[in-house]
Image (cartoon, rainbow, N blue to C red; front, side, top):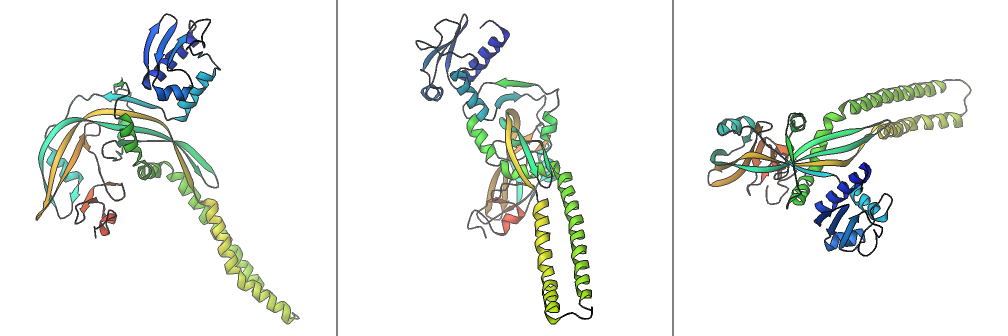
Length: 355
């Protein structure tokens, strides 16, 4: 592979196979690969292949990987069918070592419980920076990108962290795919839906308000039209010489106007309702050193230990997640079984036996 385009293709194939567990060894003009059985079956090639220059490329255990080849097409289908995920780490200059009691008091309220710090320690936590493409469909359409950061360990959404991580001065160092990355990814995604609603709220607020104004305007015009129509129909009954059948017919039609108005109003509501479709488009798994705080809460004989995380990027504690609905919470309630709950879920614990 001598040309620049061929070199780019060589690097792409090498990274693709390496990231999926293949054992690779370069030689002049290409590389040799020993593929895991699952990958071999997926790509429909032998487990042992050679990729590169050669007249017999594609024969005797070799795979021809030129542009337009079935082998490359299958790889592109896999790549395009998955969300691009990059792993990296972010080093920080300073980790806070004191003052956590004040931060906890400022950021959280534990109802009917008092707490104290039992221990603190530094560790690494993975955060998922997720970029999604959204389409908001109503009488008009709005589309764009929304980004949010989730704590892979707790599932908490970290407001404001995207903007801080977007600072070009931040030094990210790429990491090879590590054991457990897929599990971290899945754990974070499990909490994405509820947090996307919060992240999108501000993004589509002007669009939502525009549709609401149009609905109110058109609904007011519609009501005025039907009220005028009703007045005209009632006035027409005052004309002399109308037969009893005609009068009865017009009265029946007049009586149906409120029902027709309600249907037209419902049609308007549907017209200006907003349906939002969100599709993840890219993701970055970021390993960040943090301070983990073991916080013991007590109320009479009841005791509960929480693990709080001081985030050196936001210089604050990551939000706690309600075990009932998955939303971020700063006001923390507990059911009799000591589930961590928001004020709504606390009324009837969704996890059972929590009334």
